Structure formats: structure tokens, C-alpha cells
Image (cartoon, rainbow, N blue to C red; front, side, top):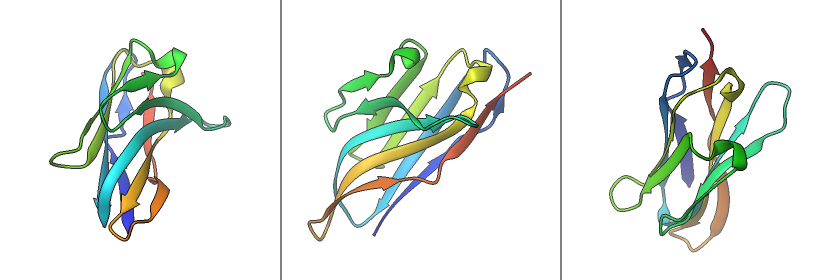
Amino acid sequence: QVQLVESGGDLVQPGGSLRLSCAVSGSIFSINQMRWYRQAPGNQRELVATITTGGTTNYAEYAKGRFTISRDNAKTNTGNQKTNSLKPEDTAVYYCNAGVVDTHGGGYNYWGQGTKVTVSA
């Protein structure tokens, strides 16, 4: 079994920064593409950014310049998202998503439970 657990969500003032983490654990053989999504109150879930196994990143237009994602495959199987210059419209629950091949050879798409980010003065 594979689990994804996000952490780092908090109440932040506008203009502040925040770092979110996504820890992947369990019977992991390999982790393919990792993705960050967010869902603001009353809105649909939207893609923030993706990162391949090799570290190639792709950002939604609104995320370019303020969001940075990374991953550590070698040691911790962790994905990270750093956001600078936070705005009230960044308030959302942020989710991690990853394609994982488990030790039994099965490949599945997993979601974390989400971590809440609130940007407010």
C-alpha cells in the first residue's frame, strides 16, 4: 500500500511565503510524475504544477514565477512546493498527486488528503 501525506499548510499574511511537502511512503518501487493541485472554496480542483522523475517541471500559467516545485527521489521520496508572494486568491486546499509503481508491479495514481493554505491579513 502507498500513502501520500501533505504537510506545511498554514495561515499566512499576503506577501508571505510557504513551503508544502508531500511524503510518499509504503511499498514503492518507483514514483513517476508528481503533481500539485489546489482547490479553492467553491471552485474546481486545478493543476498547479507537475514534475517528472528527472526533475522537469511544468507550471500552470498563474503559477509561473511564484511557485517552485521540486522532489527528492533518492532519499526521502518527498515532493515540495514553495510559494512566494502569496495572495489571498492562493487560499485553497493543496493536494499532492503521484503516479506510483508499487513493489507488486502495480501502477496507480494516488492522492494525498490535502493541506490547507489560508492567505489573509
